Length: 80
Image (cartoon, rainbow, N blue to C red; front, side, top):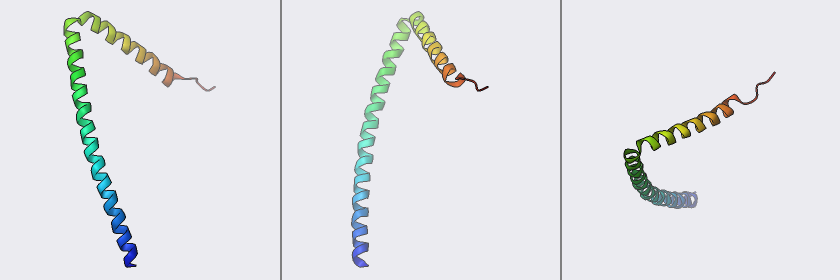
């Protein structure tokens, strides 16, 4: 019985250690993603400020495409 408890404790310690490592790595990756998103948003903001007409047309086109795709997905074929 004691050997089972000891084995369980060892496995539990390994799992906790790996989970801690994974959390630290995930936090590092999340920080990288946040930095990349912030940089991308800055680039988009600069473009929109310099080209408001083009940005509006691009946004309208994207909205129309997404709306059409959603209509096709939701509409589908009606059963008789």
